[in-house]
Length: 230
Image (cartoon, rainbow, N blue to C red; front, side, top):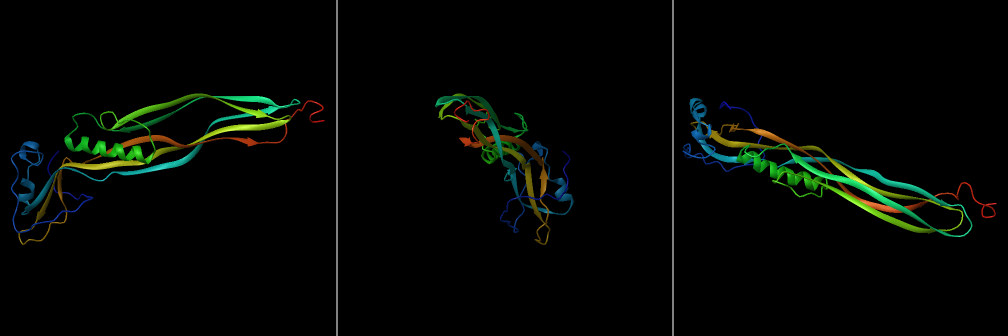
């Protein structure tokens, strides 16, 4: 990336010391070897006040939800005389997942940002996953259960299983290999930090929570057997 002076909104603050300028380090992300030379700053007549290596912002994560999803719904009725045992079999699954657009070797600041973002997404969408590599994971919850209930004669009810779904709406985090703060020769703070390797990493997520299970009453059975409904 070509070094340049540009405006960047950074989500942190630093204490600036205007008495002395800081020399460019010989190693690390802010060094010439890291392709983050400071010459454009010097060419602009500025002095370096301080710098931050492998800078990462706070994550910005918003979610859509809760969206109530009816996972299972089944209406049962007993139209005969006398009580009977009614059963409903649940054989369902729902997938929780977190994914951040990052690859191994993308850079220390990118990988650090990806891990922070993944944790933020996981919490926001209630994704019950293990974060493999620190920034992604997927888990499918599956279950098979039989629910039983005794129905009285001419009785009709609906079994319903509901769960709240959450998906990420916004999920991003800023990062940079090097952020440099500068001032003019008279000590006035230069308003815009200079950055090298500045970028944004995004991600997605989905999760489920708040399971609600129950039987809901309906009118008597539709075709009762005499004399039960006669």
